[in-house]
Every structure is written in C-alpha cells, then in structure tokens.
Amino acid sequence: MADTFRTRLKITPRITACVAVLTVLVLALARTFTGGGTLGRRGPLHGWYLADGLLFAAALLLALLGRGLPPRAARLLVLLGGAGVAVTGLLAGPRTSDDVYRYVWDGQVQAAGISPYAYTPVDPVLAGLRAQAPALFPPAPGRGFCLAWDLHQAAQICTHINRPTVHTIYPPLAEVWFLLLHTLGGTVRVAQLLGAALALAVTAVLLRTLRARGSHPAWAGLWAWCPGVAIWSVNDAHVDTLGVLLALLGLAVAAGGRRPGVAGVLLGAATAVKLIPALVAPGALARRGGRWRLVGAAVATFAVAYLPYVLASGFGVIGFLPGYLQEEGYDQGQRFGLLALLPLPQARLGLVAALLLAAVVCGVVLRGDPERPWSGALTVTGAALLLATPSYPWYSLLLLALAAVEGRWEWLGVPVAGLLDYLYGGQVQQPAYLVALGLVLVVGVARRRPTAAAFSRAAGRVPRSSAGAARVPDTGSSVSAPGSTRAG
Image (spheres, rainbow, N blue to C red):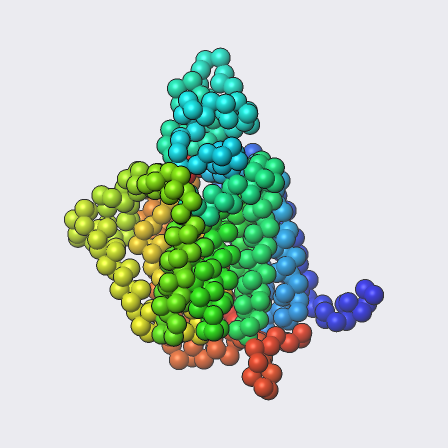
C-alpha cells in the first residue's frame, strides 16, 4: 500500500523538502507557545516569531516557485500542514491576547438569561455569577492587586477579563457563538478548539474555491501555514475567524451569481460576527445583477441578528464601540498612521480616510470583476486596513484569506505591520505600515508589466480540461511564484 501511495503521489525532492520545512515550522511554533513568552514577557517571542515567519516563507516558496508542487501533493500538504500548525496553538493558554476571557464570560452571562450588553463584568448585580467563575475571577492576592499580564483589577475584584469596567463590544452573532462556547464547556480550551476547527474550515473553503477557479491549491497554504493563524485564530481564539469563514462562503456564492439572497445572508451574518467583514460586500456587488437582493438580504440578516438583543438592552447593544474608537484615537484622527504623514490637520484625517475608502468602494462596485468578487474584496479590505493602521494583527485575518484566494502574497506585509505595532507600540506604526504599503504598490506595479502579467496568467493556474472546466488534475506542475490586554 505504501508503494502504491508513493507511486500515485509521485514523491519528489521538492515534496520531501516542503514536508521537512513544514515539520520544522510546526516544531518551531510549538516552542513559540511553550517557551514562556507572553505579551507581558515578550523577549522569548521575538526570535521565535522571526523563525516562524522565515519557515512559513520557505514553505510557500517551495510550494509555489518554479514548477512547484503537483496539485495532489499540494492539497495534501496544505491540509496536513495546516492541521499541524493549528494544533500548536492548543499547547498553551493564550500568550498574547486575553480577549477570549470576555468570550467565556459573555457566554456564561447569556446562559444565566441576562443580556451581555446589560452589565459590566464587575457590576454588583453579577456578583453571584462571578462567584461561579473562579477561573475568570481568581482571588486577589493579600496586597489587593493582581500580578500577571492578563490580570486586571477593578476595586477589589481581580479578573482575567480585560476592561472589566466597560460593557462588551462584540456584535450579536459573536455573542451567539459565545453562548455556544458556554454550552460546550465554557472554558478557554474549548474556545481554542473551536478556533482550530474554524481555521481548518477556512482552509477547506479556500481549497474548494481555488479548485473552482482553476488556481493552484498551494495558495491555500498562505492561510493554512501562516503562524498568525496559529497565534490569533487558535491560541488567542479570536472570534474573527468565524467572520472570515462566513465572508468566504458569501463571496463564493456571490461569484456564482445565481443566489444573491443567500450570498447576502452569509455576508450579513459575517458582519454580525465582527464588523470588519462588511468590507467584502463591494466585491460581491461589482457590476452584478441582483445586487439589491444581496444588499437587502445582508441588511435584513444583520438587523434580525441584533433584534433580540435590542429588545433586551435597547441602545446598550452598541456596547463599548464608541469608547473603543475614542480610546484608539480614531475620533480625533490620532490613529491614522499613514495619513498623518500628509500635511493635513489631524482632526480631519478621519474624514479623509472615509472619503478615500469611499472612492475605493465606488471603483470596485463600478469596475470590479463580477466573476472574481474576492479581488474587489481584497482591494477594499486592504485599503481600509492601510488607512486605519490598526494595532491588532488579527484584524488582518480576513485580508490573509482573501490574499490566499487571489494569490497576492504581497499583502502579508499588512498583518506583519499590525503585529509589530501590537508588540512594540506606536513608534513602529508608521514605518511598518509604510513598508507594507510600499510592498503592495511595488509588487502591484510589477504585476501590470506585460511580461509579468503573462507569466502570472500562465503560471498562476493549473491546467484546465479541454471543456474549460475549472479542474485540478492529480498530477501537474504549473504554478506561480508567490505573485491582549486590549479588546479587539
């Protein structure tokens, strides 16, 4: 049987090398999570993050450069390598974000029949629930203060929940997910397991989408093998991954053009998990019939998701969102790192950012490719992140998945910039995002050159059948060069 498998798979030195690099990547990630590095002790993270990133890049290069991997081998390695990368995030508790503790708490509050938007975690009304959650509210030490990067004190209460004196910020379908988390056990480990399942589901959707488009399956490795997925989706268990999955499904349905209502429901649901997926909607609307049905279905889904919570909490469902925007400096234009380089009044940067993003949206809707909604979605999402320059790298998970569909590796600079900003603070924000913008522009210009464009078209897709169906053969080789302590 082994000989038959080896014969069918046609193991080559490149496959062997890619397997070796992925194995070392998994081992390096395992050490990243178990080496003692945390957001409060960042020293051990620096070297391991660099090693993880280099190994990830090496795996992608082996899978995509030159003749690359045969599609059958690529699919298998994407799945197995992605599973190995995801599992490493389960080896320790959250290392760099404590958002998941709020997820667990919101689920517990809802299970008690209370709206998660009604009270802050330290409200006296919830004293009974706090007593039932010692893992979230450990006893305060004798001196009356908490000592850990992921512990916070409010009055005499010590808790793992960040910002314990403010209301939750998460949209309603995220809250439904937190209630499911509680039903399945209501622990951080369960949240991490769900995060791993979501990450693998995104990988499966990417592989299916790439196959339908006739693109090489190795591009799914841009998501599946990315160390950031193990860190942000699994170890830190950010709910953003659920929004990514729903957004990808919605775009896939929109690409077919036959069920705009279904596409709208999926995109509306994605936005009701985390508001960021709303950025993909222009790609789905590009020069497409039935766009009003899509918009109507998306808006209706978003509204229906909010309705039960609005009935319970009224305008309280807005939660900490206004406070978050103020805290981050968006309301006064302080957060727009790249726009701050322009000779403009800081107070007007928010308006400038909105106008620029609106122009990008209009361009995508009016001139985008209806058969490639991912392309327009990538453009709008990338533009929004470059304009907003967020310090939360997991906001770029959606961008990462869209870049995988489009084979646009240059967008990896954006999550890297967010990570550097998150770890080192505002002093690196502008240079990091400036380099990310430069990478996108330089590679984008290079892609438009006739020779580069011809190479990209010839190499970026696997051979199709004579009938023109988007079919990935089992053997083939034509591939492309890879053309907190704060809630978020």
